Amino acid sequence: MLKEKLMFAGAYKILGIRDFRCFFLARFFTQMGLSMQAAVVGWQVAQITHDPLSLGLIGLAEVIPFVCFVLYGGHVADIYSRKKLILSSMFVYFLCCACLLLLSTSLSSLIVVAGSFPIYCVIFFTGFARGLLAPAQIALMAQIVPREMYANSSAFNSMAFHVSAMGGPAIGGLICGYVNIPFAYAVVSACIITGFFLFWAISEQGIPERTSREPLFKSLTEGLKFVFSRQVIVGSMALDMFAVLFGGAVAMLPLFADQVLHVGAQGYGILRASPAIGSVMMSMILSIWPPVKNSGVKFMACVAGFGLCMIVFALSRNIYLSIAMLALSGMLDNVGVVIRSTIVQLYSPEDMRGRVGAVNGIFISSSNELGAFESGVAASLMGLIPSVIFGGFMTLVVVGLTARMAPLLRKLNLSDEIKSG
Image (cartoon, rainbow, N blue to C red; front, side):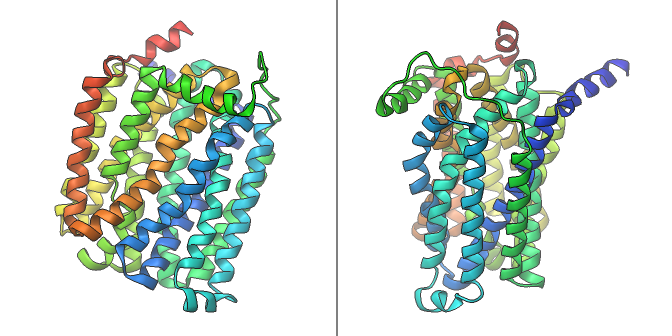
């Protein structure tokens, strides 16, 4: 009993760091707003078009500018204040949310004339903001916590992300169902503003020293070369990317809620929040017992389990079974998220954290949007349910290929890496 109490207290010791508390809360409110916005945009576009491909185009509209800009965002995060870069991106997010609010109120005639195209245009600009925010956030978190707490910080960061990802869609769906879409965007704006001021409260961490000032192109390619020269890093990123790319069904949830399960906007909000509910439960476990032993085997087993959950979800006609499978998929996915995040923090030199974080963003963050587009195209060609079954099967194939092609990742023990540092 005493040992368990000491383990519990040690796991939550990281909350004693003031800057991490601010980061944790800022991450929570920011993601709360962004996940709510994603859910509201998905529902709004689905009501306008009733077309699965149109839902996939939401992801494509964001991922194109993100991929084009994120490497530069990583370069900038290694030579300028990461805190100031985060604040700049948060301001752009707020402007974009304000535009979505206007499109749903005083400028709603544009949607009548042009359909969902104006919404895609706004989402396009959020991709640039995300390209600046993602690498700066990863790099800043590594500056404000000691090395021995990287696994704990990854678990807490994942908890903040998934608690907000759980609450955001649920709140967004309920507001759309019981109030209206404009009010939902107003709540999103309030969350973004709160996140802005919490990031502002973090102490300035300074700019990491670099031995040389490479030209822009060389600086950008150095991050890519570093990642691809480390089998453990590139293997973990690729495994997570392809699992989300093929296995995710989140983008199609509006149609599952409307056409398969017949649960409406309120049920859609619950379905959208279900993976995050599972992730939060797993985050609480991992914050006390981080997956640092036999990490590679656990990573691959959980990704395979994620693919199986998607197959069962696609076959389900029962709302409770569907919720359970989505929640279980979130639990399994979160193990991979924590392991990958810890790998990136442990293996990245301080003066390259921004650029490595940018490459990580291309692999992982963009896979959500590319996965949404893939899901939309596959559903248009194969049908809604067969497309999700196909994606789950492809996830299993990816796990098998990764286990064969990345033996160092399969044999990974993060506990050894933490001790060696």
